Amino acid sequence: LIAVVTLNRGCGVPNYRGKIELFQTAEGVVIVNELSMEQYLYGVVPSEMPASYEPEALKVQAVCARSYAYKQTQGFGYPEYQAHVNDSVEYQVYNNSYPADTATQAVKDTTGQVVWYQGNVASTYYFSTSCGETTDMTAWGGEVNESNAYLQSISVCGDVGDYEKDLPWYQWTAEISSERMAALLSNYAGKDLGTLESVEVTRRGDGDVAAELTAVGTGGSITVETENKIRTALGGSGYSIVRNDGQTVDSQRLLPSAFISIEKKANSYVIRGGGYGHGIGMSQNGANEMAKNGKNYMEILKLFYQNVEIR
Image 1: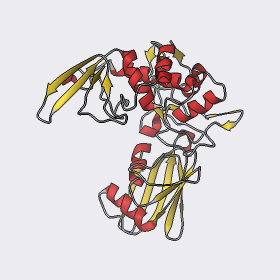
Image 2 (image 1 turned 60 degrees about the vertical axis):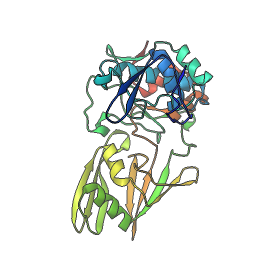
Image 3 (image 1 turned 30 degrees about the horizontal axis):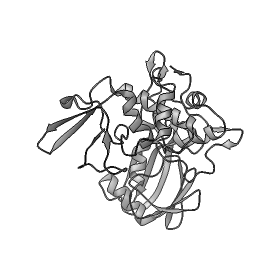
Image 4 (image 1 turned 180 degrees about the horizontal axis):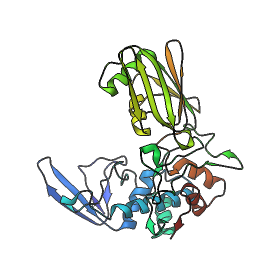
């Protein structure tokens, strides 16, 4: 193992398997880590999912992470360094948490396995927590077609009801003053909307996700499309969010999810939402709850990714 003492990650100073290559650039030194797929996953799985999660959930994460990484090896994200990915959420988080025996075992138990759909390795998108439903590619402004039809809106429920119903981010509420809402939306739009008259979800996608948001003020109006842009427009500082577990947390750069409804009050807007993340593909907490209820990793993968093969 090679320690890079000038780096600081969630686990402190990270250690790297394989080879380290250094490139001098105008901005500083670029560090490239070259290693095998399976060794790479030893650093990804515990960084993307708590190593304390159920063994079957960790296997799900391992297969998803391997499938995603395999897709990335089809081209170079950084051709100037012959590198496929970086170690951040732009791709998959790598080496932010210490390797863990449970995560390593999940990688070994699924060695080489990836998700296939119609003869191709699938893009296995995943996110933190569902509201009991997932959505499809139209949430990102795309179209459902033959190549991505495995990403469908499904219900994340079983005999116990919604698997995630007792989790903190299953449902949440945010009340935002009209002035603050106007400031957030004006800042996003790059123009002063004036006094807000209405903020409404004007179109929904599968799973009831907000696909279009329209805000009207005395200074003009804006329409925001796709889940990520809606979450960006409604995100920012200056308000609180009350979670399913009763805990109050500060708002962040993005609204937790776009599975929302908006109610206008006298001097505020109440956003009622569910889930955390984009809502496409696999819910990590949903996978863990399903594992607790006796589902194996193959069953879990085939719920979140419809009509696929794992091999």
